[in-house]
Length: 374
Image (tube, rainbow, N blue to C red; front, side):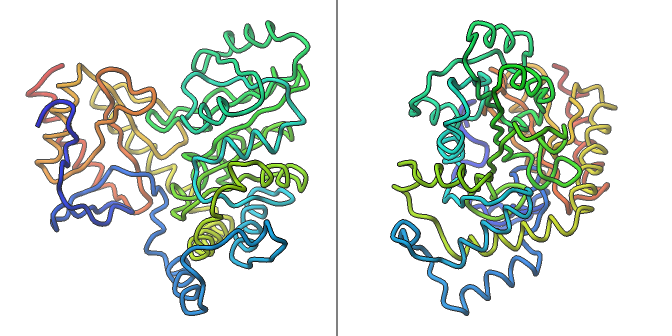
């Protein structure tokens, strides 16, 4: 295996929706993935899928709404998303990659220029490139640099764009400061809550909820991570959602799977009605980060269900991942956005993880680092 090859190679993978992953049929303790609330085995979601199939729901769907039709599964998930976020309505999207396209189109009358964090998710950067608005960037998470860029755009209303939780590190940007800067310039925020929804904030709505921001903050989120569904949503007013649906990216896409829509609706309802799910997960993630810091690792505090650290070079990080794998534990050695040249060890925390799981992974990390100092 070369340094650039993924650890799992051509192995057969199954499961992974929680603390257990099957690799070539063998169980591994899993800290990789994004299904943070581990809802895959919840009867509420499985029953929703069974009912959809038994009721004759199709596996895919034609563009019914564009021709004036009514499609109950999609109406159902959009109503659930609006209830979850407390908005008038929502647009269900077949993929999280359409979040930026939907948001930028839906909010188009409210801004003159897009201003993106330089580490914003690729879906946001690509959507900005395809939009009709001018685009500027600012240094990652840097309030002073954002203010500098906004000052150069005097008289133009900004749409400040960022992830709510950055996928690799679990970091939350200082959205409260972004909001104040936007408000002072008659602008607004658009936040991709994909790694925050279902986990972060008192109502588990995400980073905008965590910072208790006002009506100038707008969101979209995938449903396939913390909420363990499929597809994504852009939420907002009737007018904003209508504009989003009219954009070519959405009109030119299949609306997605009705079965996935109904499962996602069940997940949104479950998380909205059971706030202790997210609170318990945040406590577990905090406990793992505390254990890692006790080993001397630099792990940032965050309300997300992520614990990430970098130490040494690429070979050192890959060596640690390999040692964990040989001990029956799978973690990511990530080279994703913001990981840096050596990559990062990224541990996802799932709702079904136990303190014994945390003790086990930390014990292997401690022993390997003692034998292999960076």
